View 1 (cartoon, helix red, strand yellow):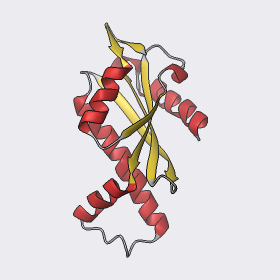
View 2 (cartoon, one colour; view 1 turned 30 degrees about the vertical axis):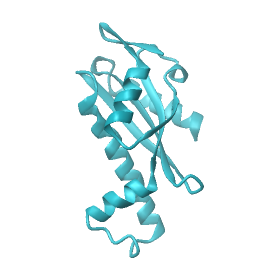
View 3 (cartoon, one colour; view 1 turned 135 degrees about the horizontal axis):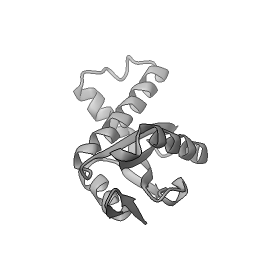
View 4 (tube, helix red, strand yellow; view 1 turned 90 degrees about the horizontal axis):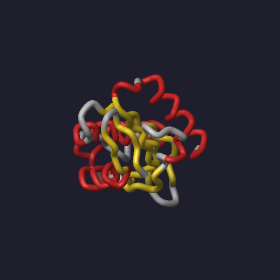
Length: 138
């Protein structure tokens, strides 16, 4: 899907490739059309628990010592952080938000919604779209 990005037109497939090439995320769905806006890019994404475990181990976490609830919070916080760090690969003047919404035990992954737009649209509109998309996937 093509979206308006200030004075440019961006193909969501190009952004999808940037995400896949520069992160460990998998794209589950291009939700740009479901945002009901012509100026927002949105994806339903996932990241493997195994990838997150390796990162947490590298940071010195003892995964055996953590209780399940605290570990789940760490997974979700880390997934959100990794998604937001993708901003450095995105077009100039991009703002984005990512929100983890589910731990999928069967697939062994954290699922999250990722939404981005041009800075001129603003954080408030971006937050509204994240909430709308979370109600769809949640």
